[in-house]
Image (tube, rainbow, N blue to C red; front, top):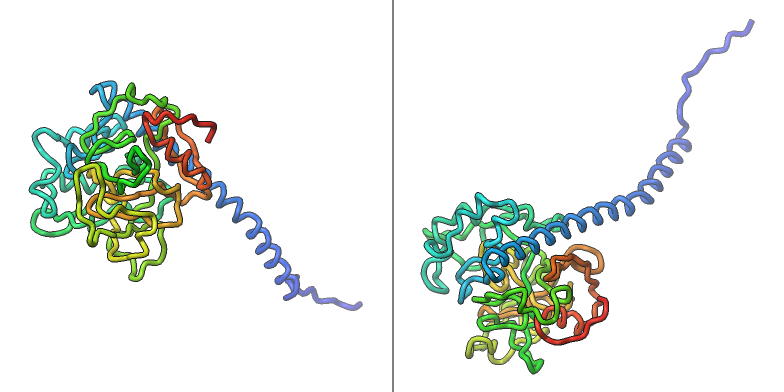
Amino acid sequence: MTIRSRLPWAFTLIELLVVIAIIAILIGLLLPAVQKVREAAARLKSQNNLKQIALAMHNYENAHGHLPGMAGITSLGFSPQALVLPYIEQEALGRTIDPVNQPLLLGSWPFAALNPVYVNVAATPISTFLCPADNQPPVNNTVHRLPAVGGNFVTAAGISYMVCTGTGLNPDGSSRSGDIRAMTDGLFWYGSRTRLTDIADGTSNTLMLSQALLGRYNTEPDPPTGPRRQTINAGNHRPLPTPGMGVDPQLTATNYLDYPGRWGGRGSMWIWGNIGTTSFNTFLRPNDPNPDVTAHGNGFFAARSNFSGGVNVALADGSVRFVRDTINIATWRALSTRAGGEVLNDF
């Protein structure tokens, strides 16, 4: 009788390669779907954050008779977002803010320093203020040129959600360089005390909040690699005239080509009511290919996100929408005015 030895069963090389190829194809098919699911979840979370902040603005208005003002009458005070902390389940942190007796900054610009009372507060990240789709670190220690007591840069927590200061235009449609030192056509400016009843265009047709990508602070390489997180400083040879009139000559969307300097503090400090830190305007489209531009505290600061094709916004009625990058610029600007009288179709 012939005895046959039983060899252990095994893959041939060809079979192994076929299995690997099949697995690679399946991963290739599944990965885009997984990424879409993740983006959808992040977008939903971002919209929920905006909804909470918008409702907090409403609760603040109910309690105080007006929406939270932006930084008092200058850029040296608190942001509207900081003032609504008690209404987004941050009561303990909100109680530490005392605009009457403890100002945010001590001294005058450009030598203003962070009040020591707020050093730890400013460095506290708040999840409701951060978009989950932004991969920039939420805490930084190179905020603009704002020195802490002792001369070191401030360690501060960032913010993704910005209040709307309007179009950045004068009533005649000319540029005012995003100047918010006087009343704007939006809901917020330095010293604003806007009421919801001041919104003649209707709260469902007026932007209150949108989002922006956090700046790269002092880590952006030179020359710059792209416009999404950059703010170009075009302040050279542009003196500041009367508040509300912008700079002279006025900024344009292409002043980034001058490239005299660069600022990386976009969204860098949720507690500070500075135009570039906690606000946006609609001079540029959402996710505009041009970088933001600033000069002497004025500027064009676009709404931006990492979401495909657009940005999340919160309207003054508390509702939240997704606005496409392709929105007509006239419609986008009309959405940011509180009393422009424009007739808007669906957007």
